[in-house]
Every structure is written in C-alpha cells, then in structure tokens.
Length: 130
Image 1 (cartoon, helix red, strand yellow):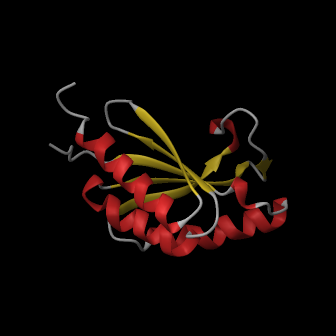
Image 2 (tube, one colour):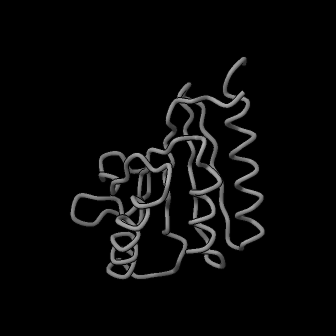
C-alpha cells in the first residue's frame, strides 16, 4: 500500500555539461515550471549547506539542484513532466520516503525515465510494513 505522506524528490541537473551560469539559468527556469505540476506541493533551490559533498555552489545555493515535496500519488505525473522536459539528457534524482529511506536514480533517455519511475513506485509501495 502506498503511503499518503508527501515525499522529497531532489533533482540534479549537474550532468548536463553546462557551465555554472547556464546550469543556474536552467534550474531557475525549471523551478516555476515544476511548481505548476500536479502533485508538487513545494519546490525550492537546494541551499549550499544542504548540498551533497562535492556539489558546486552558486549564490548560496547548490548549482543545478532543486528540491521538491510531492504527493506520492502524483509520482507518474512528476516523472512524466521530467521525462518530457529532459528525455534525452542525464539527470539524477534522489527520492526520500517519509520513513527516512532513500533511493538514488539516474535517467538519460525516455526509456530510462520510465524505468526510474517504476523503481520509484516500487520503492514507495514498499514504504509501509517493513
């Protein structure tokens, strides 16, 4: 049974091969767009102090990283948006369940986005009862 608590999804565009300014422009363009996706409760740039080790920072924020809070019932919608927007570009996704478990996913094609979405759904479906 899928949990009804919101989940955290961190999106990293650092693999796009862009310079710092282009990467920041890309993530700042993505931010208002993803906020409009059904099921996205909140979305923000990742503050540098919360950045994974080795991540680049720009103006107090981690370069090319966005953190979203989503309703798990809309995981297909959110992944569909990302697939349509970045279907042939490499992005990294980190999904954190309400119980603290995490899964890291990477996709660089429409097919890989489909597989990553299945993995995310299986991960969320196994949240309860473990």
